[in-house]
Image 1 (tube, rainbow, N blue to C red):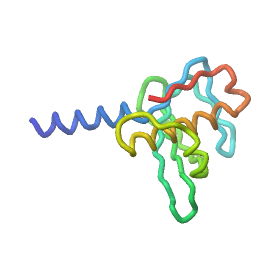
Image 2: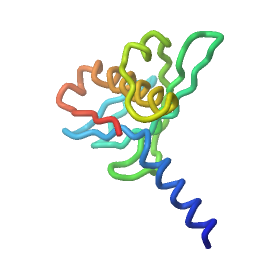
Image 3: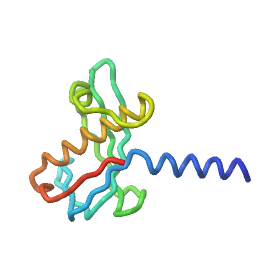
Image 4: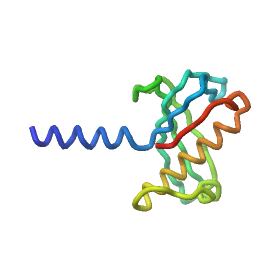
Length: 122
């Protein structure tokens, strides 16, 4: 039972971290075709590729207020772009992840149709 509770606590911690929430209506994503979701939660999973000096950000778009992925897309950004943001949190990994969230938010905010949307990293 104790092991099960520990696993549940880890899962809750992981699912709460690394989410981008949105308010203000429909969020538009560009991944081949334009996709639109109403107030989704976006969970990012970044990976740094030292050979290409790029960060690959896999974004899982979840239905509003859930962690149930309904769409997945990938965004590639340079390390310099990620480094331009200030990290938050304790430890280098948390700070890297925070900067990746901010880089992905900047990408979403660059889509004209998202001008009325507020994105919040968590």
